[in-house]
Length: 345
Image 1: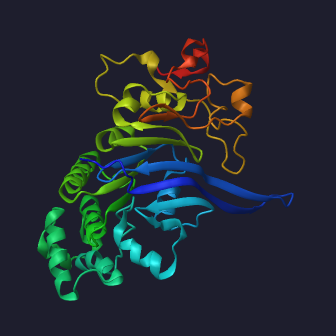
Image 2: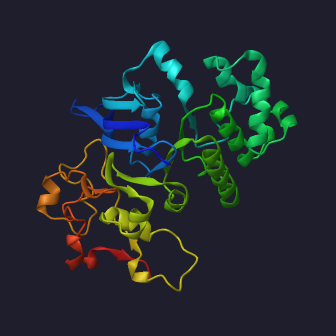
Image 3: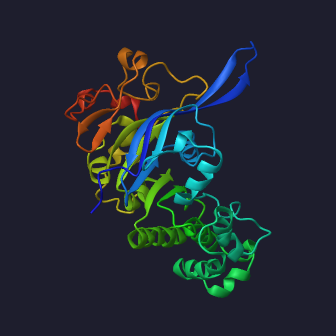
């Protein structure tokens, strides 16, 4: 049974980067992540989805403490992860590990595969040194690699095999939380399915908790229990998998879901396929009000000037939209503004 007490809690997380000065000498700041709140329950998968540049990967890196945190708190169990440094931060890294997006650049090309998997145990002093080679052999077997492949270098593996090495390396320290930053986006579709199935099997076997970053809604729907939709550094909608995909509330979420490719064209209304116009605003100068207002077909002056808060519409669903009330009623559906949407024929 999944516990309601979160394994990871994120509150008001902000990550801003100094972008130098413009031509007038005014200091510029990139608002990559701008006030996130979410919890991840133990043994579940929490997905973050959105377009490129929405802040998904920066969120993952902030949780791993790979980029400086501007403001906010991150708590792993009872440990204030956002406040740790030095030896304390090093010690807690045993409990959270990361699977990177690119299996070609995330492995040291000068080290053999077995040493790559063993390295986290050596660096964090996990287990007895004499027992580490046996642990490596177990992990190779568990992720679908042969024991003799420990002696090979990364360039001697396929992309899918390299990602399996990355998974084995992440598991080496017996972590509780795995941060998966688009771990299948660089792989062929058939290999993606193999890695996703492996992640599900490992989660069931070891009771792992995942933070899963992706731009692919199909992957997120398959793997995740709870999902947050990000747009320009903020969460615009959050809910469990069933409610998010059966009744998306935010116009941006509905546009993303309508764009998911489907092999079944018979039951798909072509008029429901929505392509958003324009590009997201620059994170250097985000809009004053709703950050989606410049691309939303239902925006008004209130949307442009007042930033919507992330409000609850049910026990497991939240949305940041002025056009959705506290009961989850979509107020913009009656507006005749469909001409502002470009429907794909």
